[in-house]
Image (cartoon, rainbow, N blue to C red; front, side):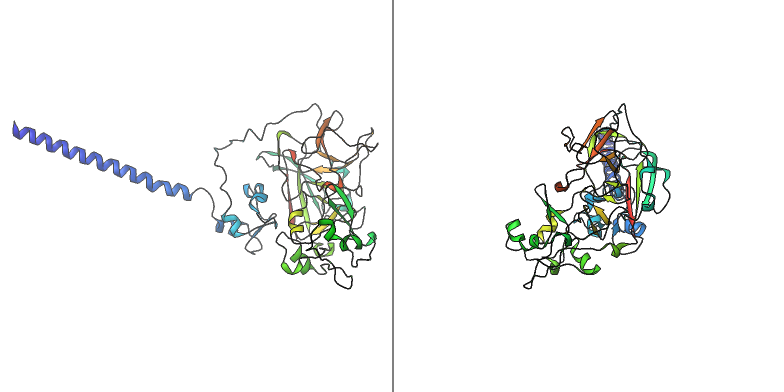
Length: 400
């Protein structure tokens, strides 16, 4: 009996040891698999640069990126210089992992109106187009595919000349400069305005003019590019920034706009790569980054038509002043100016009787039975053409 008991004890002991070892091996195999999953979550920064960096300058422009990276471009571009650096790509948040065809229902609840107006390509000025407008199936901002218009322009207005922006002497009149805005008001950037910036902003650091009364203005493309960016080169602090259109004549902007706009109950924030297009092919931009401009004691005036030039987009509008082609309406409604990137129409700020619209949503939009849902451009002094987008957006790419 003692022998049998000992034998049973030994067998049980061996079985227990074997069971523990199996559990340990199972745990170890799971731990070995986990890092592999982590490594397979997405492409590395090197992979992205190798695949997309066409000009091999070590960073990605808006026209080079695609897919989810394009949708999150403005979020990743922390310094708003219109490029994604290696550091910004490395620090970018990982995209949320979703099952195939898993659509974010919160941001993609479509609302159908009784009236929805399709985009009308014949309203664009033909001389502004680089190619015939075509229709193609493209992927929109929410990942869905739709029939879209492909519109390629040089962002060169046909209705007006560009400029001027910066006066050259404190005695210059308002015909030598453009406009600026503060607290909802528009101001002429003449010599007197430049001379009184200390009082205007209550800041003694402003000094845009020299002892002889001449104003410090960027005069070359190199100076323009040193000043027209969020992290202004220190040597261009206290300058009036003037980038000339001829620096970027080779720019081409291609807009992908859905033929039939789709309204979403949840709006989306404006990106930094264009919010719409005027009938003359010029880009309507998001608000100008005035905090970065003023922090360096620089001024980047708009011309009297609401536009200026930067190295990324060429000539573009931050304000609507009535200088571009307008489509008059048969009633007293404000005239039409162009289209937002989601395909909804953009109309002027006031109606024919000079009245503001008081029922606009946060995007500057509302609905009527003639035009369906549509937007109204903000007042010129607001630095905000649109507040957000309420539709599924197309995209814009800039080359050159």
